[in-house]
Length: 434
Ligand code: AMP
Ligand code: ZN
Image (cartoon, rainbow, N blue to C red):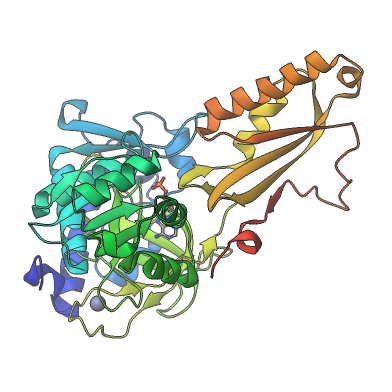
């Protein structure tokens, strides 16, 4: 029933002892990086005597990773690092994360543990419908499933008919899939005149983007499977940070690899278990890029009640939202500022724009409404079409997703009272659930 009984069922006391030792070990590793080395020099990082003292360590922000790009947080020499991943677009510096061989092994181990917990076993056929590349969802799950011993199909994203063909012909039992894509795939299944009974699918691991309990239930109903919530972020490794067990009441956060805190995002104050706030994480075993008190910006709470599955690692609740303005579009992280910087550099673009996010055929789609510069507006239709294409191409290069671009006449976007509202997220009202 357990992948690693000792690790998964360790007493709370043992876990706390282990965490304290590993945090101090992490501190000694981290301060070898230029970034944390400097903080140590300033007296901001000291070893701790009890877990209560974690709160005295400084936070690490995504901006710290960006400002110290590329190697400022690398805590060992480059010849020990074997892989890099990155989680967001190219405006300014992207967030890059490094791994040693051991980091990759630990990561695969955590995913093997997570998927085993949900029921994946050797003999299963696992189809990984996530992006292979800089995004961690593809390779992370891939190596985890192989470590577990499941026959793994790296089918990647898109091409729904082929995905379904694999599902059917390979007798796939488990998939890793974006929740929004799972809903879309269900409609393609229907178009192909197939029923869930024609497949051998038993479970889906869904994550990388926010989704509701209703969405999960819809996926479970449409494919007649169990869908397990999977949480992680590139900065900590990727997926495999927290995962649902068969009881599906929150995600067990692997506390022998990460030390979680929940803080008030406004004040930074640490909140007790059960209270909602921002998840802050300290890595306990990472070598290439250990992180102290990393602000994930994800809003959740820690569930401290024992779980009937017997695992002692506390759970986090489904992610409620973010404490920053990051958007997740079909699993891709996008900041509104990236969009602004990209379009404002294009001649012909006026001063006002609106980013609308819609659900189209179950998937997310950005609609960019952009006012044209008054001088440019009197130009030719051809000129307008070119402008539209330039904007679309630039955004596609920057964001890796294709937006729909609508050009509006100057003044076409109603003036906002006070601060301009740049983002209108219509997804929750458009989400079709039956
Ligand atoms: P990335 O580093 O590109 O994998 O993105 C990580 C971010 O995706 C997290 O910080 C969350 O905001 C979001 N995310 C990942 N998994 C989930 C999940 N299961 N539910 C909600 N949001 C998620
Ligand atoms: Zn459990």
